[in-house]
Structures are given as C-alpha cells and as structure tokens.
Image 1 (cartoon, rainbow, N blue to C red):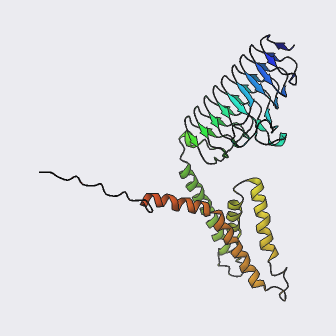
Image 2 (cartoon, helix red, strand yellow):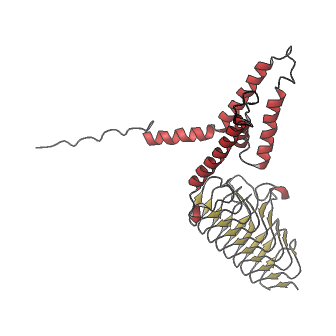
Image 3 (cartoon, rainbow, N blue to C red):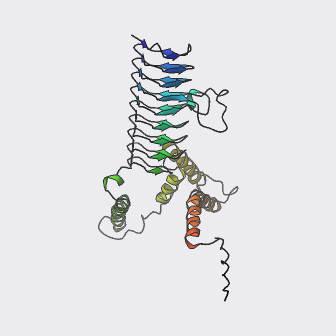
Amino acid sequence: MTSIHPTAIIDRRAELGEGVKVGPYVVIEGRVRVGAGCVIEAHSVLRGPSAIGARCRIGPAAYVGLDPQHLKLNANETESWLIVGDECVIREGASLHRATHEGLEHATRLGDRCFLMANSHVGHDARLGNDVVMANAVLIGGHVTVGDRTFLGGGSAIHQFCRVGRLVVIAGNESVARDIPPFAAARYGGISVKRSYVLAMAISGTFAGLAGAIDILGWQFRLGVLDIQVSNIGFIGIAVALLGRNTALGVGLAALLFGSLVNGTSTRGLDPSVFPPQLAGNLTLMIQALVLLFVGADVLVLYLWQARRVIGFGRRRSPPAPQAEVVS
C-alpha cells in the first residue's frame, strides 16, 4: 500500500508505484515515475522528467533529477531525463542531475543495484553500469561512463568525458583525468602493472620467436628457404588496435578499413593497364603509416610539451632585480 506523509508535496504529474513510501517534507516535482516498493525519506527532492526503478531507497535529503549544471543550457526549454535502475540506494546528500539533451536515449543513467553513499554526485549525461559503489563525497563529472561493479573510493573525482572500465577500484581522494581500462585494480593490490606488462610481452615474444624458429628450421631441422612467407599481420594488428582505441566498435571499423586497403590494392584485384599494382601497394603502406602517425600525434605532442616544461624552453626570463645603491 502506498504511504504518503501529510507534509510531502507531490506534483499531479508524478506516478507512484505500488507500495511506495514517501517521508516528511519530500518534494516530487514534474513528471517523475517511482517504481514499486521505493522508499523516499525525509527532505528529499525528486524532479522530472525522471524514472526511478523498483525497490530503491532515496534519502534523507537526497536530490534526484535536478537540472544539469551547464552554463549554456536552458532547463525550461530542454526536456532531458534521468533514469535510475532497480534496487539502488541513494544516501543522504547525494545528487543526480538530468542530461543536457532531450530524449531517453541521451538520459543520465544509473544501473541496477548501485550504492551512492553520502554527499556523492553524478553529473549530467553520465552513465553508470550495474553494481557500482560510490563511497562518500565521490564526484563524477558530466558525460562520464563507469562500468559494472566498479568501486570508487571516498573523495575521489572523475573528470568529465572520462571512461572507467568495469571491475575497476579507485582509491580514496584520487583524481582521475584520463580513461581507465577494465580490471585496473591490480595497482591497489600491490601488483606492479608495468612489470606485468613487460613480463607478458617477454613471454609472448619468447614463444613467438620459438615458433618462428621451428617454422624456419623445417620438418627435419633443416633450413627451409622456399616456404618462408613475409607477413605484416602484426603491424596491421597494432595499427588496428591504435586506431580503434581498444574498443569493440572502433577495432571492428578499423579492421574493416585496413582490410579494404590491403585487399582492395591487391595485384589480383587491379587491372595493370588502369592502375600500377606496385604503386597501389606502396600507397597502402603510406596510408597505414599516416594513420599511425595521426593516431599517435596526441601522445607525441603531449610528450614534447612536457619536455618543454622540463628543459625550460620558451619560458619568459624575469628581468634582473635592481641592485640597491649603497649610500656611504
């Protein structure tokens, strides 16, 4: 049975599910859909358009679905959404803001079974997966994506537009200003990430070299010179991973691009009278090299900029301080 405290203020456009409990001095404004079995504790504010899943616990004094904090947005003219999953806990002082663009497909989203502790904040257009835990005073900026089962330590902050993979553990009071890959909890468990990378590459290179040596030595450990084939699969694989930014969709599109370049310029598919096959092959290598150059250009520019600061190049030299005159 739905229970509403007499001091609560609820908009006529709001929709409350079966068994919802609304505490004292709660304000529900606009088109807010509250799922069955939710508990909204005292002094909480819910503003729509928002959709709250079933069996959620909100408050006390939580702020859900407020206008996004954006300088160029007119909240009165933009009907943006906030969508909260089932069985979420939003504790005291926590805040979630709606998106900056209209439509459910652009909504700020909170997955199922998320736990937002006291005074945590989820900015506009953010997307959080399932089972995300945000400790006290965690700040998530706008357009941030957080994967499933991620733990964010107390006081940590994630800069806008960053992506945090699933099963990541972020220590308390840490500031995140770049993307974090999935499973990046090893650093906080005492495991050297750099050493693990080097060791994995060394083991992989050893097995690859052993396989190549066996292939070249032949069946009876004799050098085979007639069946050795030159392949650029490794080079193309690295280029595809860089261009795709290690994302499933990006790698698929990059693989399609490089596959078209390699097979489209094959000597078997070109008419020598129309386009020289040698020129086509060299043109493919040039395009691949340019792609790698431009993909890694941002890293190169950042490295040069940091090196400039280290060596002090381009700094303005302060004028020498005037010497005081000695009066005898």
